[in-house]
Image 1 (cartoon, helix red, strand yellow):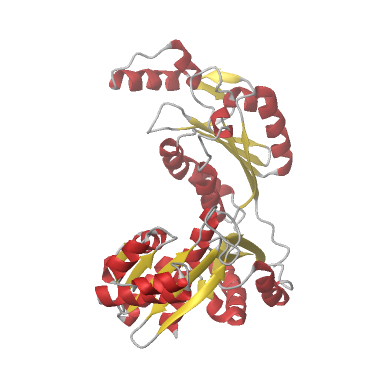
Image 2 (cartoon, rainbow, N blue to C red; image 1 turned 180 degrees about the horizontal axis):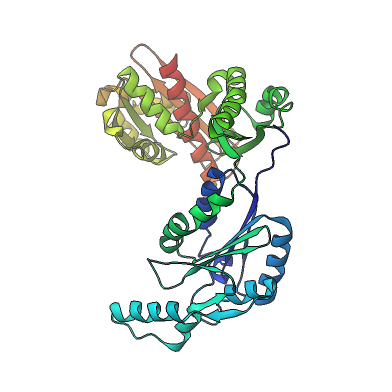
Length: 417
């Protein structure tokens, strides 16, 4: 299967606003999924501002590399909308004003009670030889262009216009030109290992494979192993991806918490429902982050009873029943208090599992004995109360997010035990 080569695609998002801190390109993520579904491999994504010279330079390079080039944005009526002009220049083709398209634009403005200004007429300029893609959600039409063996698709920038245009107008045309290959992915999500330790375990398994290809990613919410397989049919591609996924999962065991893309909180919720168990949380340093993640899952009321943010010592005493003497003797950030918080929230809510976190998220508050990043997690069940000690490096956000991830993963493993 190594000889198979899918069509290679590039996506360019056009617009200077996408190079500021206030706007981001989300279209390329959506388009990548659609292209992968056709068996096409997205090799590069780029954002280029509204500068004709840079845009022309990028387009020329992309057409040397890619089989399919998709551009979003820059099809509006203003002077800085340069997509049509830049592509026409690179392709050596004229811009031709489509009178039928111009009339439809006039009718659209009239329908909604707006006066069409002269600059809107630019949106009826079509690159010579292009097929017009109708925009039913806005005024900017798209274009489908063939240049030798290359395919170029120009789409409007707003997702509410781009997505239906691509689905209805571009996707059927593109599917006809796909080479008959299909791509399948499998994503394994992993917890409880460092990236280097995991790769040491699984590299001997995936390295002999050229199809599927393997990519290892790291994030606060865990490690991910992405497997991408290519075959002449979707079924065969999925079989190849699953075959390697099964081998890796067998090696990693319970460290794998998802193989279908589910989040950890989704997996925990499914396990709690399956076992008929109910969960309650008591949070100090995470400030409700765990409860938010749990309740982000639709239907979480079936297994989640309550979340208590007991930030102060007084709240720990009054809301969770932590003995004041325990805090005085050991401090709020201690294994004893973590266990008392977990037991307290379990008893007061009637939950089957109570989980608590207390720690020093920083950037201040640490001491030599209890540095920033020190966290204790408590877990209470019907017959025991346990704790775990963590020392998490990084800033306040990372301490909180990683604490929540580790605590939820402990719930998963407890339910599986």
